[in-house]
Amino acid sequence: EVKVPSNFIKNIVIEDLESKKHSEIITRFPPEPNGYLHIGHAKSIVLNFELADEFGGTTNLRFDDTNPSKEEDEYVNSIKEDVAWLGYEWDNLFFASNYFEEMYKRAVLLIEKGKAFVCDLSAEEIREYRGTLKEPGKNSPYRDRSVEENLDLFERMRNGEFQDGEKVLRAKIDMSSSNINMRDPVIYRILHQNHHNTGDAWCIYPMYDYAHPLEDAIEGITHSLCTLEFEDHRPVYDWFVKECEMESVPRQIEFARLNVTNTVMSKRKLKQLVDNGIVDGWDDPRLPTISGLRRRGYTPDAIKSFCREIGVSKSNSLVDEQMLQHFIREDLKVKAPRVMAVLDPLKLVITNYPEGEVEYLEAENNSDNESLGSRKIPFSREIYIERDDFMEEPVPKYHRLYPGNEVRLKNAYFVKCESFVKDEDGNVTEIHCTYDPETKSGSGFTARKVKSTIHWVDASTAAEAEFRLYEPLIDESEAEGDFLENINENSLEIMNGYIEGEVAGAKPQDKFQFFRHGYFNTDPKSENSEKPVFNRIVSIKSKFKI
Ligand code: ATP
Ligand code: MG
Ligand code: MG
Image 1 (cartoon, rainbow, N blue to C red):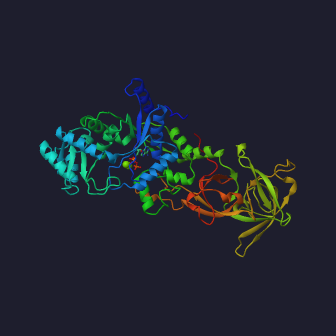
Image 2 (tube, rainbow, N blue to C red):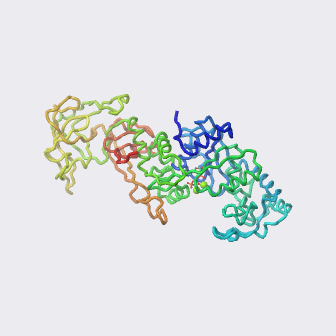
Image 3 (cartoon, rainbow, N blue to C red):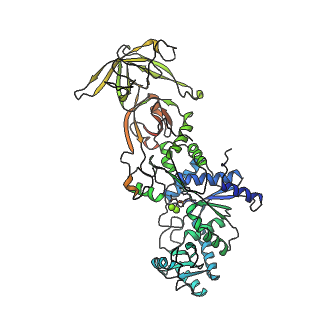
């Protein structure tokens, strides 16, 4: 069983259980359905679900759908799919919009207690009246409306008698508080807009600072985990729980958001990339979305191990993307079959190999995991090798093929380059080699050594394939200025080559290590394309150490 590494939140939970403040832990993951989930959300998902799990508690998946303008069912569905794919089962599925009536009643209660008022100031004026960090705010001229008048106006707001922006409901807290969030925050605004769940039932919608604590309290959430930017909102959170007389009192605890180098991590920015056609949808393998990582070939285990490793703290930090890559390598190292693929093919003819003959060579599927067994690979007179495994005139320290040099063909024989053929433009089109039958792989041949082993595929049985290689989409993570100006134009490189014939039958999401090239995922969106498409997840090696 997986345990959350010790952290300050876990310590609070342990304390609360020991002191009997709570007999059971209830957490929630509360996404707003205004985009697809990203790796930052994964951090929150892992934290909430595993914390509750470890202490026998429960976790709700709650859609924080209180803002109709950006929310869509497509996002609701993708979020459910992604949480489930990560391997978590929510105990309850809730929509904040189902609490609209309850929230409305509690707002009426605030008005009755003289703790809320209807305000006619414009958004602009409200901002001016709010003051600054150094200057206290000024009371709204509408602050002293009578309870009766407020009740009447609020009801008429609900009934649709006013235009968007004409009036708001505000909490009556303290315009001179040193915490600006406490200066009579807006609770409800008018928005004549269709809502993905409640349709046209409402034309007033609660603001986040009011809605969130109520949602948590309604569900009996014990520990409400959110990111650090909400630290200054905690007094508002506590105020609403208290003044709305919620029976259950949740505790908000803030932790640092996850940021990763060379990418953007905000639904707003990700949506811009999608909407501007810079990427191929929310699941583009270059995006840090859960669906993008899935399509790239990341596994739930790799993502979760990464989230556990980065841990939870109170200080914001930027995590190197190589750390994420480290975990997928670790996961696939022993799981993925190791096969051969040639991304940039050059034909090699073995002139002393009998024409028309084919032999089958034994190849281990994963030298670090015997249980994956072995396979037979065809070998014959014509094969493909990588174009850059041959040089007409070798540079110093180049030990692969060049005229007169001998290399080992992985799982096969030594071959020696005898000559090559060029086309009219001077491009090498074919190289001619001889092989030495004595050097067969596994035969125990030791009479002479070669300095390189290269991979290859048998030309007559190989299957054509497309390979997609990725570079970071953003040159500098969240750099100053518009991130759209830092788009890497070369983030996708498409190669057309060959794979071992058998690999052509790969199913969507099947993963391989292509010898010397890295780990690849069978692209799930290309199932019906002419030839299989493989997305490179990561290259083989990295200098990164945990
Ligand atoms: P974004 O800014 O990317 O849209 P958000 O915080 O607005 O993110 P929500 O849908 O409101 O997204 O977030 C759901 C939960 O996920 C919240 O509890 C939030 O704190 C958490 N979360 C979002 N982004 C991160 C992140 N980068 N690191 C850790 N937790 C995150
Ligand atoms: Mg949000
Ligand atoms: Mg946000």
